[in-house]
Length: 236
Image 1: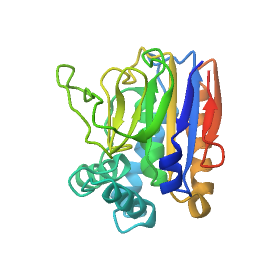
Image 2 (image 1 turned 90 degrees about the vertical axis):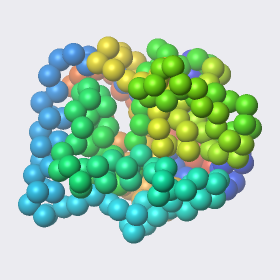
Image 3 (image 1 turned 90 degrees about the horizontal axis):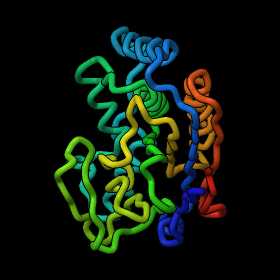
Image 4 (image 1 turned 180 degrees about the vertical axis):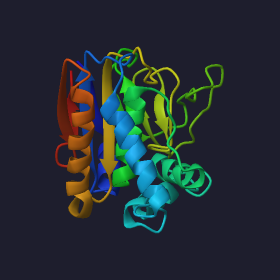
């Protein structure tokens, strides 16, 4: 059993937070995911046609994250929220990255809805998962850099399990240990907004879209929501 929690101090600082944790078990990452491929191609074509573009830092959805980052001492134009960085990359290159079916699925949902989405391989998570302020003693090994060790500064918002940090700057970058690969069979996808009053419907639409992309390629899925009034959920 793994419990996801929003720390009380984070909930107090961001009272309109809504986080969805979508779990998928029995995930089959080595088979074709044609619906995900089609969704990527559709979004890229819409961008090329000029009928759609990713949310940028002037959009209230992204601006809220920039404000949050600044509140805990991170410059969001140098260290960007994941959805902001992904949208900028898509605008520049015209294509989304192709990594693995599960990662590709949450990336297309993230950029389409302008919301941060990430994921953890639950087989590699130890203990419970907390979104909290760092105390300065934590360690973090960045995705793709298994030999590197960083130390989040005190006051930075992190997502961490009982071993070390899973994401820095709330949702800027994932850890190498809990990365999702084609061989991950039990995964927690995390979708977030700081503007539940205005964007809660977008978050729930994004959850539904991601669940549809996953359901043809896993044994089962389930969704749990966290908020300041319901700050924890036992997910598995």
